[in-house]
Amino acid sequence: MERGALRVCVITGASKGIGKAMLERFKREGFFTVNISRSESTGADLNVKADLSIKEQREGLIEGILQKTGRIDVLINNAGIGIYENWESIKEEELRKVFELNFFAPVDLTRQAVSFLKESKGAVINVSSVAGKLYVPYMGGYCATKYSLNAFSDSLRAELKPYSVHVLNLIVGRINTGFSSRALGSKRPPETPFTGSAEKLADLTYRAFVKRKREVVYPAWYRLFIALAKTFPNIYDTLALKSWKS
Ligand SMILES: NC(=O)c1ccc[n+]([C@@H]2O[C@H](COP(=O)([O-])OP(=O)(O)OC[C@H]3O[C@@H](n4cnc5c(N)ncnc54)[C@H](OP(=O)(O)O)[C@@H]3O)[C@@H](O)[C@H]2O)c1
Image 1 (cartoon, rainbow, N blue to C red):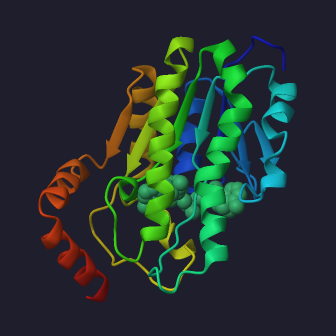
Image 2 (cartoon, rainbow, N blue to C red; image 1 turned 45 degrees about the vertical axis):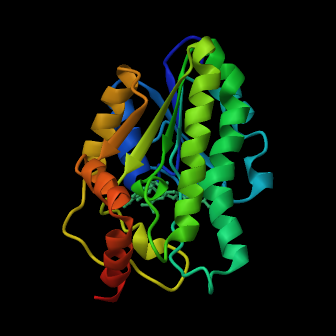
């Protein structure tokens, strides 16, 4: 691909779920799309295979992509995994693996991409979670990765502002992708009818990217839920714990 041709969007974990919906949305807008995951994404213009939870497999990834595409305009850090276990029983090795994928991989890839994003005046989009704004019992390990990701997004946004590189952080509630069934740990979160769609999230994300918004909360009613839980923490603790046992 010639330098300066199509705009390029790199997405981690676009082989399925939210990442795939993001890839399709950006592709529809004319982006050349690159997926990084362990299995291929059928829709991607370029697939790069890597296990992002392994530091060595992340080395040189962005440089390798740049050699093929000539530019990078958007980096979407989406690949992630859950871990549902109480703190007493959580396995340190699993917790470290989840931190590698959910936190260190976005940090690592962003650091690899930042000089190219400065050139293109591009954007970093981090796929975080409501679990990064509101702790959930038995999900503390996962929450910790997403609280960290939020801190990364917000401080990075301030640092990159002078270079016109935009940082968008996505606060995502429950989406039916099968994510929970793939989580590490022995617990499974209670079922809920209140879920959103990956396609709608991708649409909102694209529009927020164009408007250079700081944050998207989807589904939007989670804003109220987060505020209520923070206002009445003792009631929240009791109800949240109970919900896992019902
Ligand atoms: N679904 C929800 O309810 C929900 C809610 C809030 C936040 N989120 C966040 O949204 C993001 C995407 O979630 P999702 O629901 O779309 O999950 P998903 O359906 O399980 O898809 C996860 C994606 O990440 C990739 N991935 C997983 N482990 C990987 C690894 N070690 N190396 C490279 N790629 C890996 C998977 O590809 P391969 O298996 O091919 O590697 C897949 O493409 C995650 O960051 C998650 O924390 C999801």
